[in-house]
Length: 287
Image 1 (cartoon, rainbow, N blue to C red):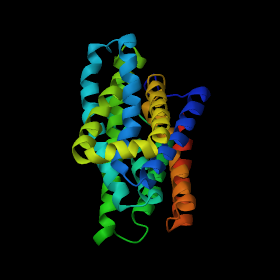
Image 2 (cartoon, rainbow, N blue to C red):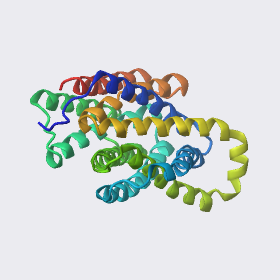
Image 3 (cartoon, rainbow, N blue to C red):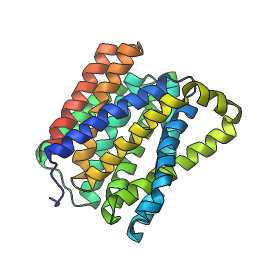
């Protein structure tokens, strides 16, 4: 096993807090009247704060630059597929699928490329998470017709989550200063969504800011802090363990969708989300 294959209780508590934050801002995006503008405001709020901080943190080490570039591209496609998943699917359905796939991919990439090999017990837990995700994807039988889109977009989102999580974990370890990597990542990630909103929603930006600007800015700052904590945690602990512990957010996502948004299959989806969370929670504590 690699030197990072453990996670402290303090780090674990912070990552659990980010899980609640993450599910909450995803619910904000899903329930918004304009998901593109909402997600843009969430991401750009973190980018603006990061832009102010750039002169004080400097550049990350040159070894981290390729990871920043890869993460920039992966986050841009992640935003696209996330918006598509929420356009065609329910929060309580697509969120657990997307978030549950991430830790599995991170574990595979970490084992293959970062010498963080899971134990046999951890492998069993990853399979448990996979089965729970499959139960969500196949809750109405094999997806056909209109059911293909939300499941397909959720799976694509999950693959991108796993990819950028692994890339950021490697990048922050090679950056010299974790804070420098985090600040530059958040600054760069605001560019694609801001560009898309300018060309696709130019006339709606000002009315939207007047109606929702304050709330979404606060949510965006919380989201940025949350992922910043996750990236920092990966500089100190195993990437797969941090990623899997964070995905206990699927419980919150399923509950919000079923209870607050009134989505169907509520009990079944919450049960499946609990299985996902149980698997990733045990995984994070199994080192």
